[in-house]
Image (cartoon, rainbow, N blue to C red; front, side, top):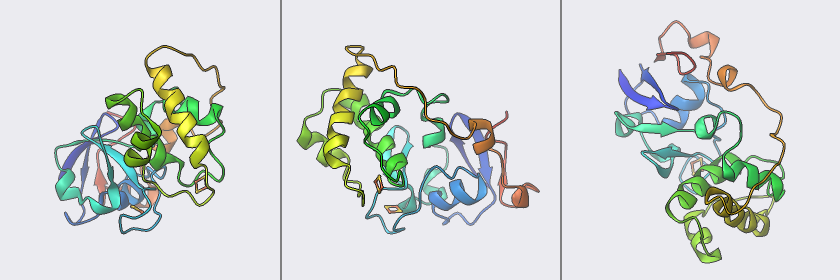
Length: 188
Ligand code: FES
Ligand code: FES
């Protein structure tokens, strides 16, 4: 068993310790907001927070994540009220949305450390690939999120429709016998 905290909940994975965290999150814990893009560390679609640092979960094994605090896009906020989420919507920095969860996690880590990032800071901290090319809007959104995080600005964007967090975190029925993951990330 490999134990860690995911979105504030203790969870234990009964998987090969060398399993990439990305696959444990998506396939065992049903946290499919974290995206599988390239699988080799190039795209950033799989970024999650590991002890507050944005890391590519395709490159982190669950053995390496043991005992650490993981936050996925489902746990960034439970009502889509995180400044980064609000600013991405308000600045329309989302097209197909596939890259968006990874970008949101990288941006959240950045503005927590540096709430007034320059364009260069953003390019360095968020090297994520976006095939739709939202980069100019992304810069505006991250800088706006930083201002919101410092309470210098408010955004009243309506939360985007989506799946309830409890449903998103429910175990995959086929795996709910505990053979792949134990612990209920949606429960206690
Ligand atoms: S899926 Fe991890 S960097 Fe592309
Ligand atoms: S919004 Fe489509 S890949 Fe970024």
